[in-house]
Length: 168
Image 1 (cartoon, rainbow, N blue to C red):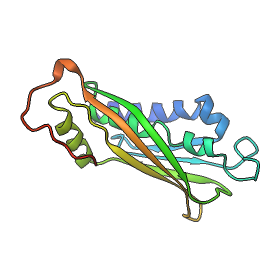
Image 2: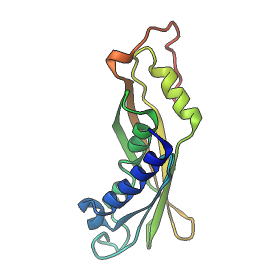
Image 3: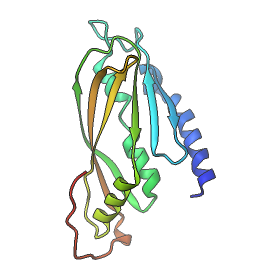
Image 4: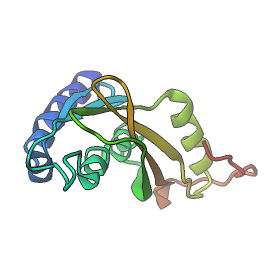
């Protein structure tokens, strides 16, 4: 896909996700999706609709704001030749979110190269990625751990002798 077309897709996806009902309901805003789909920034205010019983950010909303992005970023960077799914996730609540929060997602060429290498023979690869949710002062509110499932589509798999891969 051309760079211009990918940039248009990033702008369209940002717009569409900001209208996605679960994000609207939780107050999640996708602030930026880079033209190459390697960086994403999201934020979420604190309002009556996402406040828990003790007046802080609802844990489910904190997770919601981080849910699909690593999967989408890998899908767009690897292309249609790969199967990419979220496999598992966990969230560690570190401190109460007493106001607006944000998260930034990043992937780099090293991760993409590792995924391509580890899936070339048809093996599944389970990269483990992490994103931090921080408040306006930069204090850590939550840490989200994601495990993705990535595999080359069957008709594209090749045989290689070295299919041993370390998880990133």
